[in-house]
Image 1 (cartoon, helix red, strand yellow):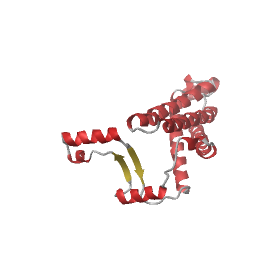
Image 2 (cartoon, helix red, strand yellow; image 1 turned 90 degrees about the vertical axis):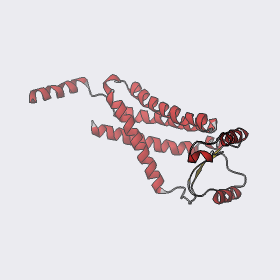
Image 3 (cartoon, helix red, strand yellow; image 1 turned 60 degrees about the horizontal axis):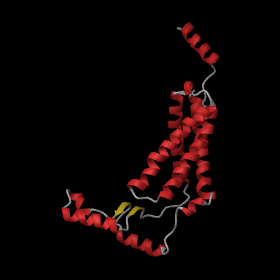
Image 4 (tube, one colour; image 1 turned 45 degrees about the vertical axis):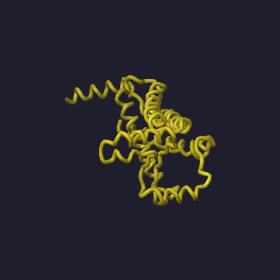
Length: 207
């Protein structure tokens, strides 16, 4: 059982890895939900001069709250700046990064494999309840759908991310886990009843 579970997770991770590359590199739709700055050099220079170190930055920011309860005037100023805009969330890396570093792909695959192992674990818990191939695919698909909705679709609500970008990322998870579910369900399936009865009988006799 463990061998089949590891194989199912491995195949699922491979499917997710390949589909992710196709989704963002081959398909053209990702360019419709993202764009570059008109003056990238100026923006980069401004960020370098303004931001002290790598990290996550929010604009506007209620700086007065860092040391405790902000004053009423400070909070009202924050609210006004937030209403007026712009509202920005910056994931900032001051150091340059290799865009196609092998370590990134290795870490990404480990992430996919770990996620697939979790899906395999959930599927294995109720494996006798899902004897049909389509049922097992549906279980894995629903896990991907849950992750996409609870993570990706929460960002536009709470962090003001663009709806189309978040929806496109959510669609990657949903479609990817549907494809991964096909591979996982094909490998991880209930054992035949006769085989299970024979093993159980052997255990009883051996006892």
